[in-house]
Length: 204
Image (cartoon, rainbow, N blue to C red; front, side):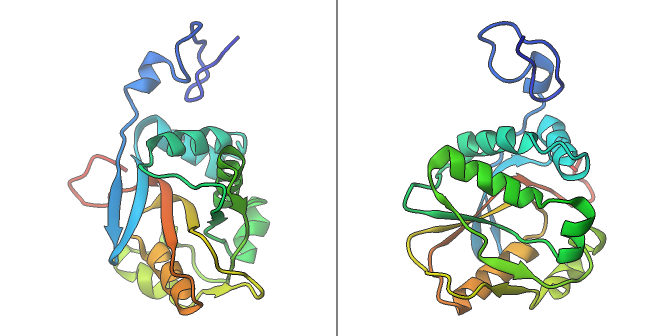
């Protein structure tokens, strides 16, 4: 019996991956510019995709990474090739210890399997307060200098920076800057969701 990947309800044969209720709660996005960097954004952080992200990130439902990766690949205007490398936004050692996994690494690994691109951990992150708890105006300073490129990393082809959610883009722009300083010139950030933070926005 096939089930909706959003809510788990039973699906009729040949009806895709979502039930009708979940299907109408999917909000595609496209491309956002953060700090002069073009970021592929699959969806708005709302509706069923937001719920799946939260279940992956905080509910321990690791199997959702594969579903979210396929949704993102179907939505992005460009996707990795076999000659490319995908790598996740790293989390601090403390966060990895508390959660037990890095959801962005699960997504990047799933994207690697789907596309044939090489999966690699390119960066490590120093400790620090989670961006979730930092107001938008302070996120760039909070993340500044927190990333280090791992040694003996060969730069060739396109490098795809994968994350689950982008809000202000501070983390992504800091990573792109760090990689640029290390000689990486072809970095394409791509996220599953873009989260609006405007007061008047109903999308959270």
